[in-house]
Length: 465
Image (cartoon, rainbow, N blue to C red):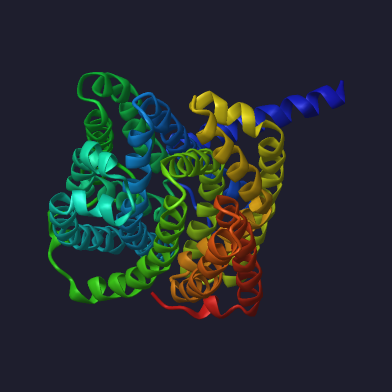
């Protein structure tokens, strides 16, 4: 009877915590149980990234029905769009670090002011990015090694995606603001609304407009998500409420944000650009290899993104606890998050090793594409446990405002190690696409080991933002 009561209390407590995590209630993450704090932040962050994962798979599922050229178009465009994502994530990272630090200091008005300055920077950057991508769309596909037919059929898709990059920038940035404030559930609902709309629109618009319909569905869906975010920033009742006065340029805050963001952007640009080079190496083996590689990446992201969501909890906890003057609690939060993420990734690795063929077959009908995708999934998933721990450590550095350390690590491990290794294995040794796949878990493992060694030294605790 007592045992039954304890189980009832346990399940009741978990249910209460789950509801609390999704409610958007203001929480103080600088005191109390660290495990509870990780749970409250991780649940909405994981669900947020789960929707992003579903979107990636659903998108490639519907586009795959159009043909191999369409899949190649989406894959090559997304490879270049990662440059835009890198800028958005870098600025989002800066906003999370600064907002979290101000919230930890209990200075909510200054947190809102910092958030508004981040939006100012994002709008200025997006004008340049959108115009450049819109006019250079056919050349972008050509530079990425697309066939003439792919360039002909896919240029409109690329043009729409780049032209609508403002919604990419704002969606990532404002979610970073919400996460810095500890309101992870609002970030989750924003992405669920954006990608939910895309999933509904995608098959309909593809039916009427072909590959262009996929681009319009994504852009419209994200635009709706951004409108939801802005409404809550201006009209909501959370910690962050932006007023018109907060948009008045404050060059001290802008310099602080840009100082964090440019190295954060460089950090992701290094990684993103390396993926572009990897895709370019794959491209020389034909459209089927490109398509198979992109299918595998979507599947891998399906489980990597939830893990990334959990690791985002480390950024918020580090930023707020450093702001509250609690560096030791910040460090304990990181190790707790890393442990949970590693456990999750072990199960994911086993799932991919056993079920790769079934998962690839579900979203692809081309035998040659399936063969490449299954090989890619099985090889790259071997390093998942290292990915899980590494992304937590990276987000911990970023949450502290120390974006330089992960940037240096990425520069060495991706450009001085991963790319040369991929080229040697794939081209020089003539292993083909498998050489590229093998280079990924090897280099990601080196990133995790390097991050662990540097994190233990503790210099990130002294960073001022």
